[in-house]
Amino acid sequence: MGAAFAARLQASFGNFAYLKLEEPLMGTRVESIRAATRDRIGVLEGWGGMYLLELIPNGICGAMPGLAMCDLFVRVFNLASSGDMDGAFEIYRSMLPQIVYAMQNMELFHHMEKRLLQARGLLRSTVVREPFLRLEPYVAAHIEKLDRLVLAELERQGLTR
Image (cartoon, rainbow, N blue to C red; front, side, top):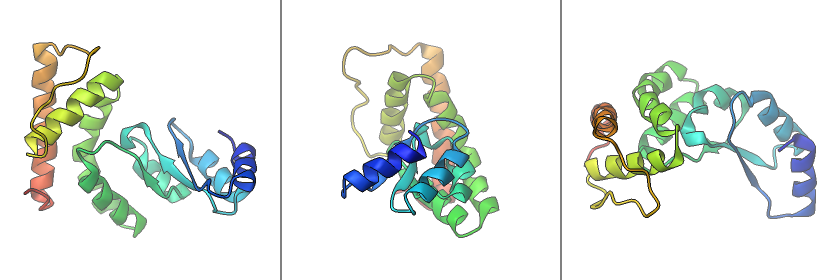
C-alpha cells in the first residue's frame, strides 16, 4: 500500500486509523504514509515483529506480533521509543532467533506460538487445527531450544509468573 492510497482511504473513511504493513525495507514507505496522511494513520509493523527496531525511527506506532512474546515486544518498543536502542536491542536479540525461525511458514508460526505459550504456563494444549504441519522431531527440538532462550529473557526481565 502506498502513501497516496492510504491518504485516499483516510479521506474517504473517517474510521480508518491504522495500517499494518508486512514487508522488509519499508522505512521510506512508513514515512511517506505518515506525511501523506499528516500522521492521522498509524502504521503498524507486521511480519512477527521482525522489522520492529528498524522501523521505530521511521515512526511506526506499534507492531502486531504473536501473543507469546508480546510483553517482551512492549518492553522493546518502549525502550526504543524512549531512545534506549541499546537496551531495546539487548532484549530483542534474544527474541530474534524465535521470530526468524517461526516466520518461515505460517503453520510453523502457530506451532511455535502455542508451544511457547504452553511453556510460559499460559496455554494447556498445543494442538493446531487441521490441516497442519506435522513437526519432525528435529524441528520440535529446535523449537524447544528457541523457547528456552525466550524463557531465559523473560526471567531476566522479570516477566515470569
